[in-house]
Image 1 (cartoon, rainbow, N blue to C red):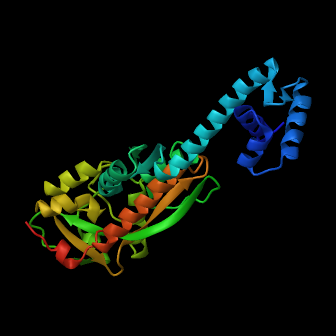
Image 2 (cartoon, rainbow, N blue to C red):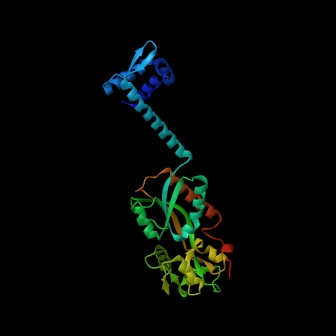
Length: 311
């Protein structure tokens, strides 16, 4: 028993006629007769009789027809639903972001979804990179924007862009628009804890220059790091996206770290533990689009003019 035979039977019953059903399906009457015979053999009952006026269903045929019509209706509904997903995709997508990236990407992506794909719902979870990778490994997230790569079979990575890491200083500091890497060792710092990925990046960078920073305090809070700098307690190192508003409000100063340039690579990490739905692919494409838009405006690697605002 297959779907073609059931659909053929439904049309024969609809038209009460083999020839008209054959024309509708563009097949021969003999093939339709074969389908009906095989259906009756599968069911072990007689479904219809031919008479001089066409076709008459048996009681068993009437009962089977009611289910066949339900099946046909359900199939058409499924076809319409699936085709509609191309024009009106739907689903839930869970994204992991760091606080710095979240401030840059969450609202633009959410706004685009509301305007173009209102049936796609996203859940954004902010956390430090290490936690985000753990959530990806366990399938809690569909994707995440991260700054490091964990090589395993549960996560794939795609490079998005490079991002400069900047020296963030209290208002009134004597730092210039550009600070050489070796000059960092002479400054008091507020940094994240040693287990954070940002701290690992900083320690790796300074280690290659022959020293390590000894912070006056370790603060695992982006907001409080910036507040500490604004209060004049010390300097820190952050990307432009984390301090853009503070810079525009002239509550901090910012300097590019050079010799060598201090930067990191931003990746889109995707979990292989979750089915890659069309909704997830759309969200991933939107993230990549927004990253490119921000890159075009020098957001990830700001110009000297963008950094030259001073209180």
